[in-house]
Image (tube, rainbow, N blue to C red; front, side):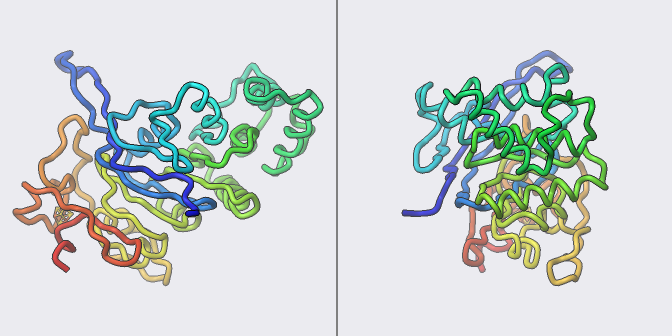
Length: 322
Ligand code: SF4
């Protein structure tokens, strides 16, 4: 039996928005033919600029957005064809940690009620059993059981994010999606939350999808990394493959400011211009409008995925004939 928890096959997600200038409808091509596999116990990072489609992809994996086509296989079963009952079970197995702990916790609910609510909705446990689960989960995230009778406003940002992580853990999920989990926190607190995620992965063999634009966090936490650009994964590999030997010009641009694992700096490639709109995708290679190595072929043809080393894939004409 393979060790795969999640396998995404040729996934497309589109949605319609209204153009604020002329009120016309336009299609947002948010996710465009994405493929990847995540093994049990891995931290899989999705990296890219804001608007590249990584949060939409995460929400689609949780079935909060509708896919246009493709497959999302969770333990071998396609969640896009799940019945309502199967989806209810799946939602217990896949949870999300949101970016902002100030808005993700209900200010009117005591912590005990916030943590008990998912147990009330999804389980038949007795009150004693629920209390024991809450107690265990609070300890897992480094807090004391005394906090449960307080309200969110009584905590710091770091403590709130620990409570939000506890809520994500309370149903004992197998997959957790962490969407920019520290970007709303003070820098002094960020390291504590990052270390907590690492401890949870190591101690409980949890599987994470980590969404962030911060390559330093990815370098510290991730086992595998996928670089997204305009809804496509343009490079994919282990953390050391991506940080020591990045291939795609966009990956190199993202990594320009981050020291490599061997202590040297990555080849600096300036990232010029803004991310094009996902309502009007460029022809050919979607990065060609910003790529310093752009060739004629890049403007008209889309490069296919090439495995440049074991498990290290890149979408770029610079590597297609090597
Ligand atoms: Fe640059 Fe061409 Fe490679 Fe795209 S395919 S990243 S435009 S060199």
